[in-house]
Image (cartoon, rainbow, N blue to C red; front, side, top):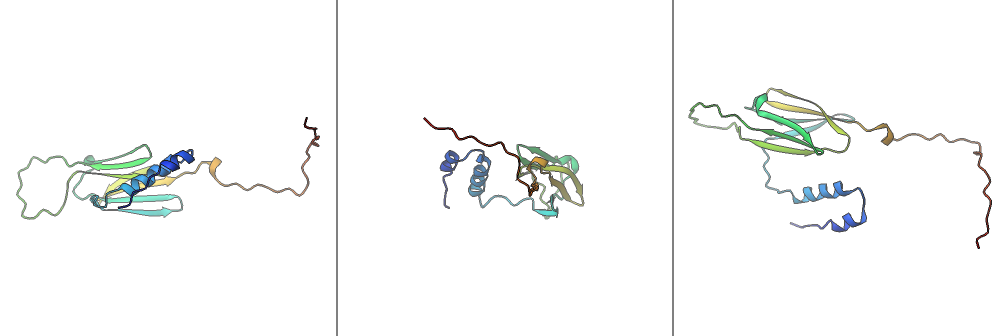
Length: 154
């Protein structure tokens, strides 16, 4: 695998360290990373998204969803049931997991629901008014400006 050095990027940019860190994490991610549990990410509206995670066998008490440092962390740990059971075939995995999703700026979790073995997490992007594009009116008259006097440079 090819590695990239982002050090020159850190020297030449200010305020873009999150982008460089995100690229570094994406490029260094192990290809053999577990795909458990499977999940979907869908766009439900212009600024709304939904993450659906297959969590068959887990109850609401076994699941934990939290947001910290621009990351959505979903984890689960199945409580020991205490029963001594013998399985002939065990195909439903209820092993503990932790799945992380990096959230963009201004993306907030609006809710989570658990139904029919699926955990649904709803997200919404709320761009502040100051960052939204705005139209500037163009006037046809010349604005009143005080005349600038030229001064001699000594």
